[in-house]
Image 1 (spheres, helix red, strand yellow):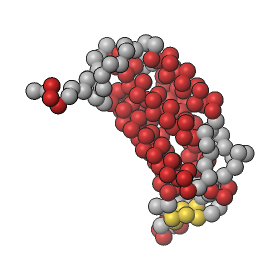
Image 2 (cartoon, rainbow, N blue to C red):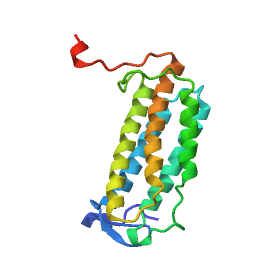
Image 3 (cartoon, helix red, strand yellow):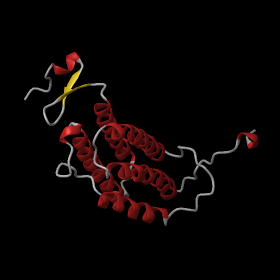
Image 4 (tube, rainbow, N blue to C red):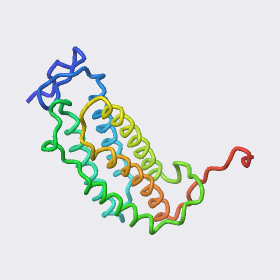
Length: 187
C-alpha cells in the first residue's frame, strides 16, 4: 500500500466513511489536533522515569483511546451514530479515579503553579494545554456537527489528569513546584 494518494495535493482529505473534506475543515482540524496531542504524549512517555511502569501503562492506554477518539472524528457528521462511538462515560470515570489516586499523594494546592520543574512535568503541562485546545476545537465542532457527546467530558477530565500527573511527577522526584508570584510581589 502506498502512503501517498495525491488527493491532499488539492487540499482535500478522505474521511473514514469515504467522503472528502478540505484539509482546513473544522472536523479535520479537530482530529488533527488529537493526533498532535497523541504525539506529544509520546514525548512525555520518553521522559517518564523507569520506576513508574504503572504511569507508563496509563499513558499507553490514553494513546490507544485518543486514537479511537480521532477515528470517531474521522467520520463525517452524517455518519456519526452511537454504533460508531467508542468513547464513553466509563473512560471519564476511570480518569477521575486516577486523578483522585494521584491527588491523594500530593500536597494541597494553595497557589497557581508554573509549568516547569522537570522535563517530564513540563511536558505533561504541554500535553495538558494541547488537550485544552482539542477540547475547544471539539466544542466548536459539536456546535455545528454531530459528535459523540461523551468526548467533551473525557477531554475535560483528561486535561485535569495531565495537570495532576505533572504535579505527581515533581513530588515523586522530590522536586519543588514553581509557584506563580503576583506581579506586585515579584522583585
